[in-house]
Image (cartoon, rainbow, N blue to C red; front, top):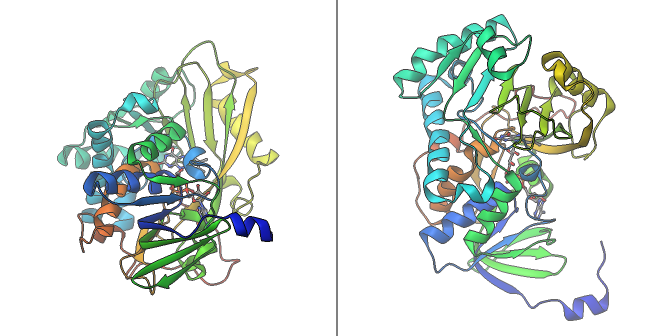
Length: 403
Ligand SMILES: Cc1cc2nc3c(=O)[nH]c(=O)nc-3n(C[C@H](O)[C@H](O)[C@H](O)COP(=O)(O)OP(=O)(O)OC[C@H]3O[C@@H](n4cnc5c(N)ncnc54)[C@H](O)[C@@H]3O)c2cc1C
């Protein structure tokens, strides 16, 4: 990209902020919200390469689910029971904070609960086994047999699963925009940050339209982080997800978000009858990587097959819209936070691995506390980079499968 003599002559003088947030997705905007709440007088600037919510935050299904995977025993196996319990509490706090601090009507929040439905006998047994453990932590949950799941959804062929009354869903674009407005930060859209460098006591951010000088910076770029900080390619990889939306159906069969087959399929039905369905990535692991914003015929056909298999009544319903989004996967499936080398008091966060909405608002508070100088805010140790796994250097290493 080049800039003419005239454009340079007229570009804004260097702008100043106490804290600059780079990335106008849900994490950047939630952090801006909490910084404003905790330190009202701060000069906050939010820089976004494109428009607010143009990345994964505006392309997702809008599910707000608990835990790293909504499958408690799987989380226990992966992270140990203590850490899994804390991850569940962290994501539960996300939901309760969101309902307490915000106006949920502003982003079409539905306190619908969520169904986590098994795709195999083994998964079904695991979900059933989790019930007692979840209840012992005060988490409301009901196990539903296959017949009960199919009756609730007016579907066929589903196995049993869990109903989590605390699950919910929202309109993700409205959510991100609402957070940005509430933060009253200076928002500069279409301002990609091209480079960062230390300057005086802070950091200088280069954009095509002039520089910004800030005391501190947060890089909330998720999948795009390695493009600005190449050394973080060991911790975050771009993985594609695809979705579709049908024309509105006459009836509403699906009253809450449905997360099935270990989360490799997810669907919901909007109030107007529109069905949103995503997933099938596990059937196309080799192709569903990188930054290309495209849909593929093969994966979209798998999504349609799924819909017809479980909801034959949708036959003939036309698909209105197909899209893709880029998720940032971490090696162990959990988000990661670290200091930016050479920039004291500045941080990056990435690696939400397809679950960023479930952490979003609570994560914004954690990041704001960190930026305001708390050395160990509650929950930080769950996500700090130190000692965590890294991706193999070999770019052809297998694509991580976990949803
Ligand atoms: C199809 C799909 C379905 C999903 N469903 C769910 C779900 O139902 N529930 C859930 O919890 N999670 C879901 N996710 C995951 C969730 O969307 C992400 O984890 C979350 O949005 C990550 O938010 P973020 O703010 O970290 O990243 P992003 O939303 O990707 O935001 C990063 C922003 O940084 C900007 N940017 C990039 N480079 C620069 C630069 N150099 N300068 C300035 N700005 C830059 C980008 O334009 C982008 O807007 C889904 C994801 C996809 C793709």
